[in-house]
Image (cartoon, rainbow, N blue to C red; front, side, top):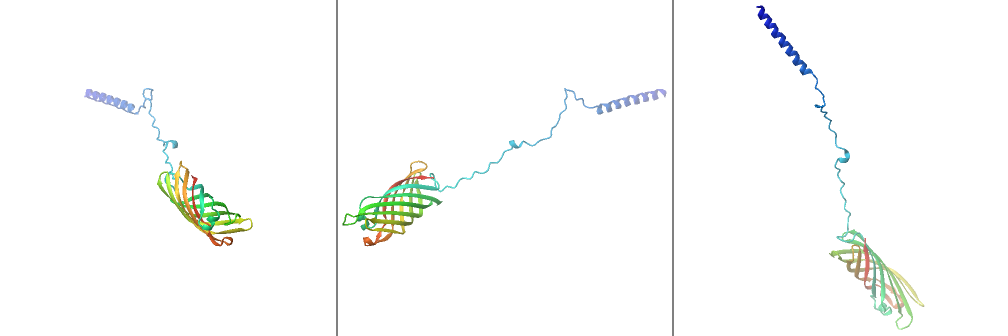
Length: 235
C-alpha cells in the first residue's frame, strides 16, 4: 500500500513540473536578435500630388471664316482702268483714266464678308470743240456684302454688291462744279494665293450714279466700268 502511494506521488510531481515548463515557454517574449529582426508594418500613405495624373483642359479651336488659307480680314490695294458709262464724259475725258482703290473685307459668317472701300479717280480732258482744259476728280466710298467661294486650295471666286457714295468735283479755268450722291456698284473677280497670306486679285467692276452737270447739258452717268488687278493680305 505504501508503495502504491509513493508511485502516485511521483507521477503527480512529474506532471506538475512539465505543466510549469510549458506555461513558461508560451509566455516567453520573442527574441529580437539580428537573425530575426522585427518586421514593422508601415501604414499606407497616399501618392504625392505631383505624381497624380492631371487632366489637361480641353483645347478650344479658334473660329475661322476661311477653309484652308486666310482668316477674318482681307486688305487689298487695287489699280484699274476706268471708263465712264456716259458718252459725253467719255468724249471729254478720252484718255486712260486710272482708278486707285483701297479695300477691306471683314468676315461675318462663312463665306459672307462685309466689304468696305475707298477709291480715287482722276482725269484730265478738254471741253468738246475747244482747247479749254477740263479736270474731274471722283472719290467713291463703298459699303457692301461680299461672297467668297473657294474653287481650289489656292484659288477663290468672289462677288460683291453694295452701295457707293460719290464725291465729284469738275472744273476748268472759268467754272467749277461739286456734286455728291448715293449710287450702287457690283464687282467680281478671282483671288489667287501666292503664299499663305499674300494674294493677287483680278477683278471687274461696274458702278452707277447719275448727276446733273449744267454746263454739259443735264444728268450724266459718273459711274462706269473698271478692269484691273490688286495685291492683298489675308490676316
